[in-house]
Image (cartoon, rainbow over all chains, first blue to last red; front, side, top):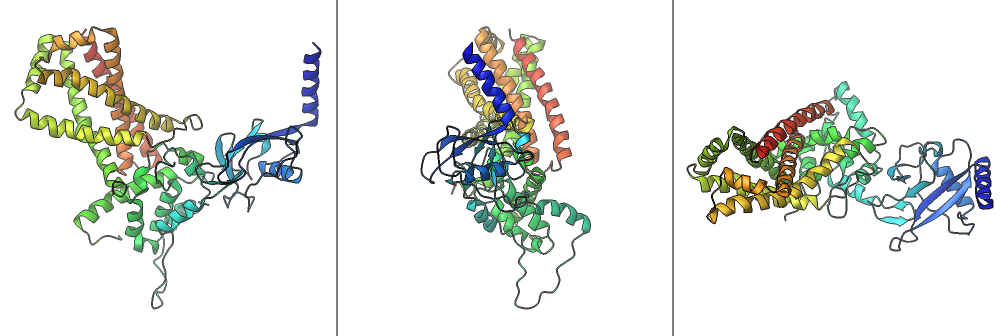
Length: 268
Length: 202
């Protein structure tokens, strides 16, 4: 009886004090074993996951009252345009800056995006995506031995949807959500396929479109997509990734025949 | 080397699933449906199919070789994904998951089915109504065959959706949705045809 009373008392205290409980999957070095650590911090109105992490950094004491090392994470813009603070929150990857504590069930579980190599705690190394961007030539080449002048004009209505694709911040959330991006495949991921569509849509970029398609048709390219369509569900920027993938599926289908039979229409 | 040609193998895998394997499945289920008209009708149809001119050539090039390529590469695909249907319980993610599960199950089912019928025939047994009647008289085998037929019709219908997306025919979200509804229809129709035929053997 008395024990039950204490439990009730504790719960009311918790409610009146209003705390936020975080459970964080921590890892000290890239090679060491991950472990869970809980933190209980004071609730403030409108707080997001990052302000919680900042609080832990200020006073690195875990829920058992033991002093511990501060939790590491990455952040830059704090307005969901850089992608640096991406992590897995309550099982789903997203940016922690726009993850408001009020919207989550407690305890809030934070994990690194383990699709990428973990550097420390919530920090991951997303370099593989930048290597893939180089592989698919995600740029518009404009250098020449003389002034090439202005490029062709882009139709306004095309620019409007291409702008949506350009919102990609290489955050890695769609790679984390994709069942086919893992250590058994070399799949470059949905975001990269959409980038090929973006640069192949650009009128000057289209002058090298066969090179980008060739990258998509090599190891780890578009063929690894299994159409689970998690990417379009998870994308924080609402990029129509599955439409981009299907569009590049068509483009690579056509390119395959051009490559095989030969064509004068490689870039148009 | 295999990795570099992955794109072409995957496209071939997608194509073979429809032509000829998918078409063969439809034909097979339709021929089976003769059983609903009685043992004689089925025996006549089965006799006709089993004695087509160049039957060995047709079997190898329209069924065995494409089926084996599709099946063995499919098994490889099935073991290179990490399911996350618990996190993303969307319709498409479940379809993605079941496509792989049914694929692996079908390798087992079809291997058993070929052993029991085609290889038995090569070893001297006669493929006819009585043979199927005998096999399906066991409730376990009947359940196994119903599961096999439904797995096959599902795998084909969902594979048809995947084929249309993989080759870039269905591109926009709306077209993919419409193709989705059509393939659900294909699944239901083929399942009814297939299961009706099975039940006619009892």
